[in-house]
Length: 361
Image (cartoon, rainbow, N blue to C red):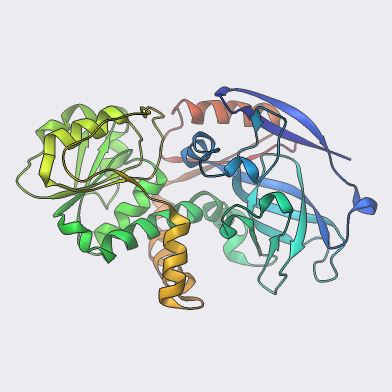
């Protein structure tokens, strides 16, 4: 049996191809393995960050690909079409990290009523959160349109939640306002909602083309286009959460705010314009935010179920806003996947759209 996989060149993300990967059929599956048909997956700017950081953060290890290529992980849904695990039935639906492919073999481990883990050897070095699959058969929160919103936003909102928690834990480093670059991105939107909810002033930095959309969101107190950032007042301390990954923008903001830049956190790479050596900047030293580290810390602080409980409450407050500001677009087939991937890579997807894809015709 073969799976069709969409893979990209690691050293040039604009180069991609479809390959056929041989996988075991139902009869040849090893003990406890599952053969899963990848129903659909979400593709956002965050997946481009996965690709850019594929080597540093081990994203390329999750789904093996030929030498020089990588299979970008994506949050989505799969259906079990064959099972050698006594506790997992054919027909079950799973939600989790899937390859951009038609099929995946999962070595089911730690199977419980709510979830299971892929215990494949090549996945053991990545963060455990990326190896977990929720069992969502019959769960209305993961069905139809609601399921699409889960795939598109829930993993990104977890990142928003963790960044907000990190800032709150540190009293926002004394900042009076928080600046978010790539303010139209879904992760920035979620973070802005959380910051606004707890009374922080939120300033969205965005392109002129996206300024209208960002201004329509209820969680930004101010919207500033990138060519106007030097007009921002410097009489109060600020924190900067960088979703864009532009070295030029980061340097401009640090040089403008200087010692008033109390925190500078790098989260995303939507602009893919980061220099290898940025030199020393005024103000707080920029640092990468790595979500699994914050999860591990809070899991210890809050005990079993603590992260899930707090995140669930935050998601319940955020989800209703999505209906008015996000349109889900579903596309199927290899040509559609290639087209939407390239448009996402080049930043051409309108911010009010969320794309669900499938390589299946």
